[in-house]
Image (cartoon, rainbow, N blue to C red):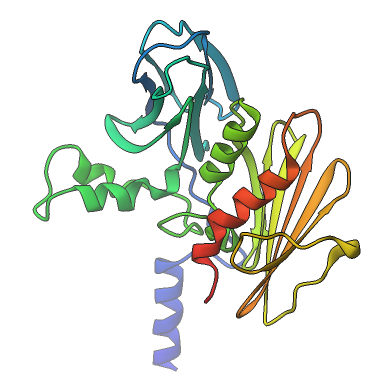
Length: 283
């Protein structure tokens, strides 16, 4: 009986009361710096999109003759995803743009590309990234920052949705930017272990990838084969959306692209996503 009483005391002192559920931790506010640098000048204004204080997209422009743009925002508590994108036309064939994000004074990610750049960062990754950057003895502001609270259910690395590990959101944004010539950051992510959907352009553009372990690729609606991918694949153009179905040694991989109002080659869009995913699919 004494042992039972002791257990009861420990439960009351060390935990929540009956029926209580621990409140989820909220991502705290951060000071974020976005910048875009160019290896030359453009023939038009640089078109920019970045995550504002509340996480919503903010549009901006910068003169193409100025090779550097930057801005700072302080995020509101609860904002989890940061992004910045830019694009501009240039007569310089070697024209490159580099997008960079800094959080609380620490550079966390950057991305470069010809005529456009795009990068994003999930704030849930910040503690582990700071821990990796920090010397073993700990120094400067990185040591306390690494211990700050973050969403407990999120793994310490990309992506939050397991199925989105085949292709990251920033890669999808880059493919869209290269094919359509406009910056379209990923705004929503959903899925499960074998499925991932990225939504861009305020629900007007989305791509869904599905991995079916051990399954066989289906020739969708009598679609013709696609050559040059190193695997058996079929492409079905169904108007405002299209489906790429590919057979791999250990299963089938499906890419569906849905686009409204964006001037983009659906087939090239789907193939670009597949090529990005292929090295990460089970072999």
